[in-house]
Length: 223
Length: 223
DNA sequence: AATATTTTTTAGACTGATCTAAAAATTACA
DNA sequence: TGTAATTTTTAGATCAGTCTAAAAAATATT
Ligand SMILES: [Mn+2]
Ligand SMILES: [Mn+2]
Ligand SMILES: [Mn+2]
Ligand SMILES: [Mn+2]
Image (cartoon, rainbow over all chains, first blue to last red; front, side, top):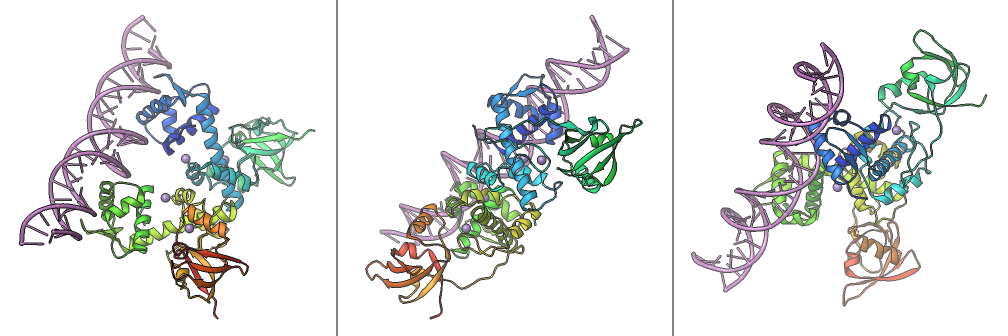
């Protein structure tokens, strides 16, 4: 496992994220958009990371991560999510405030630190947004989840993750009383715009737009 | 308060340390030795930091920190020592293992993080080595301390700080059972080499060399 | 006071990360 | 299928931080 710069780590993680919710390959402009750089800079970095065998790169045809690149990305993600847990569970930050800080902390690489932090936090399996935390080998358990938007009316379940961690989205969820672990009953799906009518924790009744419901993951209760 | 790079922060903290246990001005070579760089690199950095009004610099005559430079250094030291407390108190690292990790963590500058960390740790006034932790204004209370080496035989006191934080030194203290808070009675001072015979916590009797005793600070018990 | 030694600065070069502008390749579409 | 639009790469600069080697200044020694 090579020692990477903060910048290299940030690129690697970005590429991982883009591949995860995209396809086989990811393009230069996409990476530039996500990392806040220009395509020219990305081209340079892709060459460097390909040189280090972290990704496979054919000019003009995008990149994908190698085995080693993917594993490295997952170990960065592990640190990122462990710090997120720390910031929320221990320092009492709200879940919409932790992204930027964890973005910095994730680059402190001392392995004993990561191990002890994990232990101190009680070996959490999920971060404050419901995302799984890879273990020290870059592995995690995949539990089957359903997108709330696709849950048929009449079903009930539990919110287990959000697939958008922007402060705006998370603050909105706070306002309507939705959180990781909240019990949800889908009462109706409005034909016109695809919005959902639902009950949260048995009492509150809310309407959620299609966009919002598409960014919530649930596990259905057996009915 | 300007935004400084990690490198600039490290230089500033080093210069602060050198001035603290040295005199009025500190020279280029000294800084190079402490930061592990070459004199030429230091010259460049001194120009840059002088430009930013963090230190006053006359070519060939060494540097001293300005008011703003000193305050900035103290805020870096604050973050460093708070992280040291975290690593020892919460993550259960030994006091000889935390320097390098805190050296990295100190550069995460998000102000809410530092505030919450301080709160979470219970607003500690001293780090694991007994060094005072500056408050958010860069201030701390100076309690009068005595160097163990200078304590007259027959006196008793409490260890409150170490003035050397090398792993070798700290491990040695572990071995002879000396720690921050340990009660010490000075039984005798050996004329020949200046070493001390003392009792630790009422039972164990040790001999400490002059070098070791010179790096321990105590507060004497009123007798 | 003159010379030798030490310290510090400058000159010039290199690396990593970034940019803009221009060239090249790919893809879209008429 | 040939041209237009888009995407990507290259060329050439800049900036921060570092280095070695050489020049300059300060300090120590005779
Ligand atoms: Mn990051
Ligand atoms: Mn998260
Ligand atoms: Mn540092
Ligand atoms: Mn300390």
